[in-house]
Image 1 (cartoon, rainbow, N blue to C red):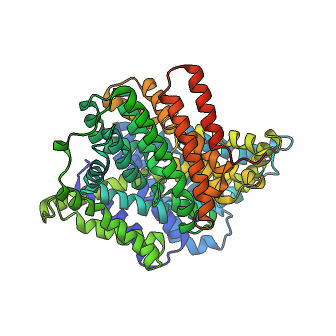
Image 2 (cartoon, rainbow, N blue to C red):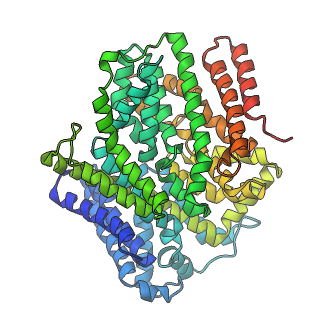
Length: 587
């Protein structure tokens, strides 16, 4: 079924629809966003069905949900005049159908946790007026509430869905096109040429290639599955301990999402949510991202000293010609992307569309730079199918998260949770940061990083900003901590996949990953203690000084955790490193 012409045709339509929205002008939001849902539902309900019962029920839900979404799109002018108030039983049925389909789509995509939160949010909206005290609300008439959620530009058609339609989907297509060609091999070859012969070289190749690939993929798990298929066998062949090899891949794959220029599309979502220009976000994010990989690099050096890890033999290094040719498969699309944004002043979405077209042309050529028509057809099919499948999965999560954000807005619950965080922390910043970090860890357990970031920053962001953080500071802090669950038990997706691929106990891998990825826990705190590190564009000297201070602290911290064997020595040296990282705090 995966290569059936009907699915391939539907995938092509889906990709052309999203590219067309960028290339061919403005489309009303109550047309583009419902059509986005109509395209998504078949991939979640039918394509991903695992049993006959799921296939039948999914087909029914696809027809009902798709018809409801199309009705919204066809009647957007009339619905715009209703100002979010339903009229009649038919419109109420459409609204309920859409909510049920959105929640069930998310359940099938990622399981129960997020849909249960969405159901609880709907329950609060409908019955919260019966709750006494501060956390009750005054009540909303049912036609008005359901209408706001389903026929107005709030609820499931709100700003988060706009990000899914115009930002996330475009960069998912970009990643799928690059992955279908030789870009992945190009990443590996460049990494092997740069670091393969160094001490612990195979691990460092994993770090570089995963940083490059992960910035595009936006998924730690997808990164592990793709680059890990090459780096994990290479490390084990050279005698690396399995737990270390798997931990290196899991940590490096997680860090790719914080690496500019794409940050797994997170940078562009942040642009939409903060109103801060893309260039400012990239300037703020680059030094912390480099610090993260620096800390991983130092950790690998410490492990290399303990286990006598060697580099890749010269005979196994890629030839210079191969490095040059394959690197072009990602350098050309990236260059088009950056030229479009900075050279021509196009929006990131428009520049990404041009980069997609450049990447699609490169699918015609193999790694010897020769035209291969047969291979082109297979690669194009793969790119279309993977793009449609990933858009379906991510969009189903975003639609469900939009329900929660819509309820927070309609009922005022978001403001109440903000006040709860402020009161629970005693009005102090650092306890608020701790509460936010815990919330990010919990949310990220079953939700991809970008969705966890959006939900958490909607709730906790205002509280952090009220306590004096700059908006970009608060958003980057939440975005980083939304990654915690990729390597932190009990749910650590990147660790599970890497451990399974290499045949090692996941707990051993997780403990090693937490030591290697200590920067993921410490650097966000360092961004608060040393705000200058986010101001590279405004005050470069102050930013570089903060960078150097934090780099020294992270090196000491990594050395203490990994190279020392005595527990008291680990604790003492680790605390010293942490103190250096946090030395910018003003008491």
